[in-house]
Length: 135
Image (tube, rainbow, N blue to C red):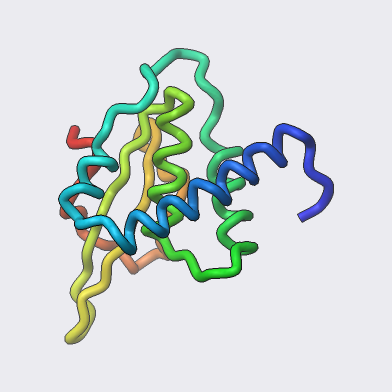
């Protein structure tokens, strides 16, 4: 991971804690309540808000170093919450894809129409079934 600045270390620590909250929320909360939490308004959107890249990087780094497995849902939820706290207008997308006899799901987060976490490999497109908060 290299040497972290105090700011990077703070983001990394926040990402670890937020991933833990996201993991517990997904595991123990009924989905309607979790959906309300995903749709909740964040800090007021403001011009000059920080770029989403450092949050995305912190969540990705933290997810690889936690003692439990995280997937796109936990990572997307953590990034979404962290971005919205910073006044960035993130949108959490929940998608599904039929593959043979299986149904797969995927979560990704966009800010200003650009994916900041959860980008898929080409050809793996999931169809959006929900966006939080609803646009």
